[in-house]
Each structure stands twice: as structure tokens, then as C-alpha cells.
Image (cartoon, rainbow, N blue to C red):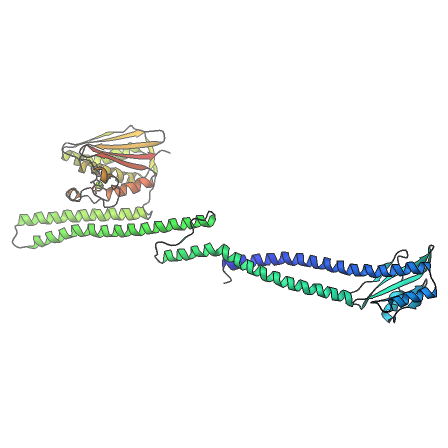
Length: 456
Ligand SMILES: Nc1ncnc2c1ncn2[C@@H]1O[C@H](COP(=O)(O)OP(=O)(O)O)[C@@H](O)[C@H]1O
Ligand SMILES: [Mg+2]
């Protein structure tokens, strides 16, 4: 729960919002309190000033008594002193605390002012207004106001703020909860989807239609899931073809071995059957080696150690190796390679490529066939073209040539000893060199293989 993204985002939001809200509420609250208290102070002072103005004009016992009488019933008390701050008239009982305030020195003698403002802790506040007649100071009017009223006001405000604060807190909490859930919802959906993918489900619901980063992520995940499905299918296909490809020669081996064991056959026949068995086992060994190569290429374990080499040297090596096989069948192998072309390749792997391509060309030649190897250097790439005038490949088959175990005619390649893995390996190696390979062919006319390698 605490580690949840929604919780983290939510609490962050919440804390931030509450901090901002509290700040503004406090500001509002203190402003309101100050305003209200200020109003009360002002009205007390106004009242005192009004009394002092009247008394300035009529400073006599009757007026003094009237003023005192006026305040007797109100929320205020008035105390009138002479110049020396000696009490000469009062509306209500004067407490010890009030006397203390009255005995204090009055600083501003011109206008009235507040002399005691501790409304929060005291039972009263006080203002003083000087009584002046023709610029002569006659005495002072002290106004005392009960703080109950102010305290009530403030308490009321506090109550209101608590209620509003509580409601805001609740609303914020609900909004934050909803928002954080809403924001993390697609993420949680994607998590669920990937979990389902791991459990082997193929089609999972993802919000790929979103146009934000989450949509991109969903697209990436859905791409991965398609890849995963494809890989699974490829693996299954591959495994079933392997077992099929292994089973066929093994059936032959078993069959011929059984025949060879019979006591009724002649020694020459037995030798012939054993020879077939040997050939089959050789073919099997070759296939297993090729499978091993492919597995290494797939897992990038096949180390491609590239270096600068003269391309023609590598090609000539292979040509020299396969020429005897060509000549044995009366075929010709011609090579045209301008010297000095440097390429950055792994010579051993490239050897394998050339051997496979030339071996194919030889295997599928018609009688008295010719194979031409031509190397052309362009600005950005080097082309190696292998042209034969053999039996050719039908259009339909062309696009499958690089598929593992694909052979155009299974029976034909039994005779030639093909596995259908050669071109698959060739393609992997060329890909690892960032090159391309393409095959064009016309049935009965011949095949044209073109390999392009980038120059550095
Ligand atoms: N030069 C070619 N002429 C005719 N057919 C070819 C040629 N090269 C390849 N093929 C066809 O492509 C198939 C795949 O080739 P490859 O992967 O090398 O397998 P294989 O082990 O049969 O040689 C072959 O079985 C063959 O039918
Ligand atoms: Mg081959």
C-alpha cells in the first residue's frame, strides 16, 4: 500500500494542497480577526472622542455626570480624570487593574489612542481621549470595553474556519484519492496486462489508443507481446521441423542397418548398405553442426571478429576449395575479382557464406553448367554476384529460401544431401555484417545471388 504509485502521488498532492490551503486560511483568518478587532477598537475610541469633544466645550459637573450616566447601562465603562489623571467621574466600579491603566503616562495628548489592547488575555480594553478646550488640556476620558464581545467574535470566526477547514480537507482528500487513482489507472492496467502476458495469455487489453507517454508504453508492450507470440510459434515450428528432419535419416539408418544384418544378403550388398548408412550419418552430423551454428548465431554467441581483409583473397580461397568438385562433374567455375578491395569482415564466417552459396550453385547445376563469381566495387558498398545456369528456382519458393529447413524439393535435396539450413546460416552471417543478400531466379535458366556489403 505504502509503495503504491497512487499512494505516493496522492500523498504528495495532498500535502502540497494542504500546505497551500493552510497558508491561505491562516492569512485570511488573521486578516479577518485583525479587521474585526480593529473595528471594535475604533468604535470604542470614537465613543471616547465624542465624549471628550462634548466635555471640551462643557467641562462642568452636570455634563460629567451625564456622560457617566450614559455609559452606566452600556457595554462600556467611562472614567473621567483631570489633567493629573485623578479620577473625577466614573460610570461603573473601577477595578485595580483599571486604575493601573489610568495611572500610566499618556503619550499622545492631541488625539485619542488605545492604551490597553490585550484583548486576548484581559477582561477589558481601554482607550483614552484628551479633553481639550482652546488648546488647554482639561483632563482625560478613559473608555473601557468588555472583551467578551471581541472574544465571542473571534471564537465564532474560529468555529467557522474549523468547519470550512474540515470540509476543505475532506473534499481535497476525495479529489486527491480520485485523481491519483485516475492517473495511475493505466499504469496498473498495463501491469496487469504484462502479468497476463507472462502467464502465457496472448491477447491482453492495452490502451494503445492513448496519445501520451502511457499510450506509447502500451504500444511498446503490445509490440513485445506480438513478438513474444511470434517467437513462441517460431520456436515450436523449429522444434517440430528439427525432430522431423532428424527422424527421416534415422529411419533410413535403422532400415538399412536391419537389412545389413540379414544373413541372406551378399557381402557386396552389405557393403553398399553400410555405405548408405555412413552417408546418412555424415549428413546428420553436418545438419547438427549447422543447427549448432544457427543456435550460436541466434544467441549472438557466434563471435564475429571482423578485420580489414582483401575480399578477393577470401573468395579465391573458397573457389580453390570447391573447384575440384566442379571439375569432377564437368562444370566450370569462373571468377572475376578486381584486386585491392578491402572489406571489414570476419573472414572465417564469410568463407562459410561463400562456400554455401557456391555449393548450392554447384549442386543445382544442369549438365556442363557454369558458375560465374563477379565482385563489383561501388562507392558505398561491395557487390558479390554469383550467377549459375542451373535448374533455377520457382517464383513461389524464392521468398522461403532463407527459412530454416526450407528446401525447394525435398526429394531432390535428399539426393544432393541438403539440409535446408545453408541459406538460413548465410543470411544470419550477412545480417551480422550489416549486409544484404538477394536471390533472383528463373526456372530452367539459372539463379543469381547478390550479396552487398557496406564499405567503411
Ligand atoms: N543456386 C541454386 N539453384 C537452384 N536452387 C537453389 C540454389 N540455391 C539454393 N537453392 C534452393 O534453395 C534451397 C535452400 O538452400 P539451402 O538453404 O542452401 O539448403 P540446402 O541444404 O538444400 O542446400 C535448396 O534446397 C534449393 O532447392
Ligand atoms: Mg545449401
